[in-house]
Length: 128
Image (cartoon, rainbow, N blue to C red; front, side):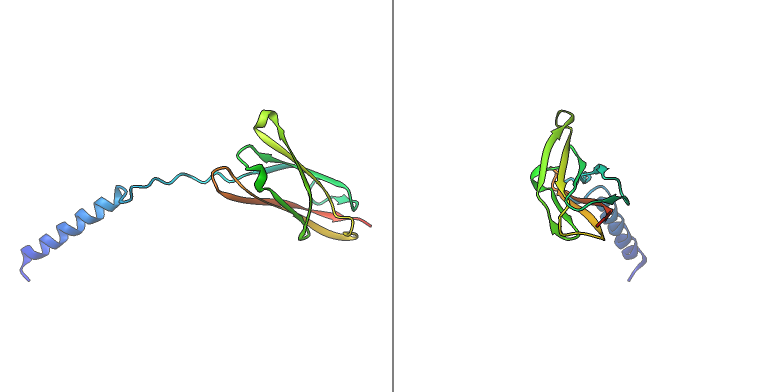
């Protein structure tokens, strides 16, 4: 090949690389805003009796119908109420009566209104 052929190939490579740098895709991607969880009651790493109540707050971008809570892999029934004028949700439930003298993780899974999945939870010691 002659030297000017190399120059032509190099120029084409630069043009292709630069066009990809400016977004070769027509779709825009938004940041995923995952649901957040806070205000855990009882507090993390504390003792709680079986069949006692627990609660937490889910952020306002959480789809309330998507919230699933398990306690040591056991499903639990939830009560979900709007809080702060709909800017968050108060979620409450009851620890299973069958759990005694063990540690249990309250695991939370939910989807935000932007279809981003999120999770959280905390650990409790279930007393006898």
